[in-house]
Every structure is written in C-alpha cells, then in structure tokens.
Image 1 (cartoon, rainbow, N blue to C red):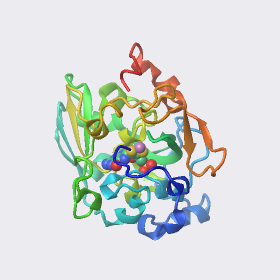
Image 2 (image 1 turned 30 degrees about the vertical axis):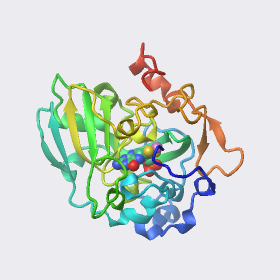
Image 3 (image 1 turned 90 degrees about the horizontal axis):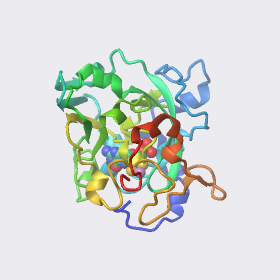
Length: 306
Ligand SMILES: Nc1nc2c(c(=O)[nH]1)N[C@H]1C(S)=C(S)[C@@H](COP(=O)(O)O)O[C@H]1N2
Ligand SMILES: [Mo]
C-alpha cells in the first residue's frame, strides 16, 4: 500500500508457496488435505448459507500471500515470521459504552458461540483477491455478551503490540497498534464475523490468530488481525490506513469498482492462484455482497465516503 517500496513484480504474481516451511504455521493441515471427511478438521463448524459457493483458495495460497505488517511488509513475511507469536494466554479488553466492560479471555469469548464455516471472498485494496474458508461466529454475538449501551455508534478495534515477537513492530513502520473501526450497524451485520479458524482448524498465527475480524464487503485492511481490544464509542474511531494516508484510504473502505484508488483502478482484481494469464476479473460492488449490505449505505455518497 503506501508503505510499499517497490513496484509489483513477479514475486507478487507468483505466490511463493515453495519458500514456506509449512510446519511453521500449519498444524495438522496436511491431515485435512489427505484424510477426507472422516478425519477432516477439528472444529466441526456448521456450514452457512452466507458462504459463497466459489472454490476456496488453497491453504498455501492463503498463507503464502498475506498482509500483516506486524511481521513485515512482504506478502511472505507472515508465513515466515508469525510462528514467533505467543497466542496463549489471550484476552480481549472491552471498554467504552458497554454494560459489562472488562478483560475477556479467549475461552470466555468462544463459550456458547456456534462456530460456522464462512467461505468469503476477500478483496484487498491493492486489487488482489482470494476466497477463504474461515470459521467463526458473528461479532453481534460477542457484542450481545458484553452489552452495548444505547449511546454507542461505533466499535473500535486494536491489534496486539509486542515487538519482541512481532518483528515488523521494531522499526518505524505503521503507527502501532494497528487500529480499525466499524459503524455499529456494520458490526452487527450477520456477515461480520470474528474468525477463530481457517479450513476447519484453529486460525494460523499468520492469519491473525487467535481472533480476527472479517468484514467481507470491505477492503481487506478493515479485517483486523490478532485483536486485543474493542471499544464501543459514540464517535468515529481512527483506522490505521486512513491515519497513514487519508486521501487514499477511508473509514468505510467498501469494495467498489466505480471508485478508483488515486493510484490504481479498482475496476478489476487479480484472483490469487488463478494463474498468470486471464486471471483478472471484474470487481463486484460491495465485493458481491450488495444484496445484503447496500441498504446500510442508502443515501450516502460512496465516492465521498470511500
Ligand atoms: N493487525 C493487522 N491486521 C491486518 C493487516 C495488518 O497489517 N495488520 N493487514 C490487513 C490487510 S491490508 C489485508 S488485505 C488483510 C489480509 O488478510 P489475509 O492474510 O487473511 O489475506 O488483513 C488485514 N488485517
Ligand atoms: Mo489489504
């Protein structure tokens, strides 16, 4: 994005799965691939009608081409370096306009939540895309657990800061912690999930373990990883890429083929893993979820509120 220091090259076009030490970031994934239904997966997530029927990218494609600046700027960095992260114990601090503020440990957050497989399209603002079979639960279920007060209009999220384990945080880089936010109605939408799994296994560290946001109709940067804090607030929170370059990255970040990034077109996208040629496809308004979410933005100027 803004921080990118080089032009797109072959490294961007060819996911470097062969470079990756799969054992470093996947536990048991090979078993999933080979075992078939009887042994597949460990989470037993229910299928969801909200999943796309598009074919998911492979685990290697998903893990081998990723943005997670806490581990570096390169697409391969999360797969190379995220194994250094400790994710147990983990808790999320919840404050602001909530009935039950406090520190919720991961077990408390997951307790009683029906895990579902949500196969979603993911569209990065950089104009590449994937299809990802996440496992998670609706953010609205967690918001019900903490109790949203009437004055709350937004949810703000923060990622862990731990430079000892997140090598990308040692230099200057972004203004840590990575921050994101949603309007409350966006946060409550059934498509918006907290993901704790991928391919029916616990979420890999490089994908934002143990808990990340997924908002499939928005550019990928909204889907914040490794969440440690949520704040319910009355005013629009900061978000990292908007703070970095507000003329290029907004708060809403709804996928929109008709609103170009100042430096590139958003009309088409490159599907990771689709091969080198003929792999550009038209970008869909709201990433194909217009039927579900367009109503949230009725009357809004989408070019102004990018
Ligand atoms: N904490 C944190 N969350 C993050 C990012 C990041 O750098 N740090 N990158 C974002 C961007 S730009 C994208 S495209 C998605 C990528 O998610 P994926 O690894 O599942 O493809 O994560 C988003 N969430
Ligand atoms: Mo992105």
